[in-house]
Amino acid sequence: TQIEQALRNAIIADQVDVHFQPIVDLRSDTVVGFEALARWCDADLGYVSPSIFVPLAEERGFIESLAETLLRKAAQAALSWPKELFLSFNLSSAQLMDPATSSRLLSIISQVGLDPRRLELEITETAVMADADVAQKIVSELRAAGVRVSLDDFGTGQSSLGRLRDFSFDKVKIDRAFVSRISADRASEHIIKAIVSMCEGLELEVVAEGIEDFAEALKLKALGCGMGQGYFYGKPADAVATMRYLSDRY
Ligand code: G
Ligand code: G
Ligand code: MN
Ligand code: NA
Image (cartoon, rainbow, N blue to C red):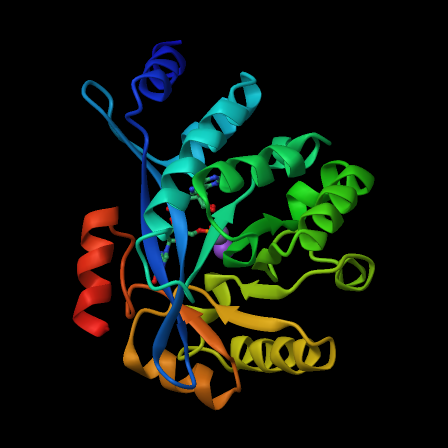
């Protein structure tokens, strides 16, 4: 198809870019890391969302080369940030089904020179479910190397609390569906409160995604949520704008 060919060309021509969105410690209001988000704007097709082209790349078997390009770029950008900031990178389902993923990712960051302890990988439950044994092996290999792993989009999809028991994660990212409704309905507030309390017991860090205004930020702090991310703190921006964002703050 046209989009598939265009994406292949864009990967070869190094035209798929990576943007960064700040993740903030809500207790101190300081930036602690950035999530890398793939961005592709084609000359003919215009802006194409990663929710379209990531699944396409998986389906057509070139997610590996796409992910490698993106991680390399993201890790390179992270080298120029203050060194305590982490880089959070999304893993796709296909990557979590491939036993070679952990060594591949570790070799990329080692080539670039990024400390594995500064890398965090975001995985969704849907991705874990495809082949739980392989996913578990990948996660434990990465964690053994010092990489942290977070469970993304928590609370949506077929969330099973058993997953939190059987898998070793470092962090849970509460899906923005709950955050966006925190001011409107009490149910979302109770659910977030329960997730925060459960994560305290399990010694997992919690990030609230999709914080869009001050009122939401205040509410999440009051609920004891440790970290936040969303347009209120910063929209995804390219590497140059990200450096500017950081130099305004540090
Ligand atoms: O940035 P945006 O909201 O458009 O992202 C849409 C979806 O694409 C999100 O679910 C996000 O996690 C996913 N996504 C963005 N960048 C990447 C990437 O580099 N790899 C993978 N696997 N998913 C990504
Ligand atoms: O699935 P994942 O959590 O990785 O998706 C991240 C996506 O959420 C990114 O594409 C990003 O553009 C989007 N996003 C981040 N912050 C906000 C926000 O405050 N509001 C909305 N609507 N989307 C956000
Ligand atoms: Mn994510
Ligand atoms: Na998410």
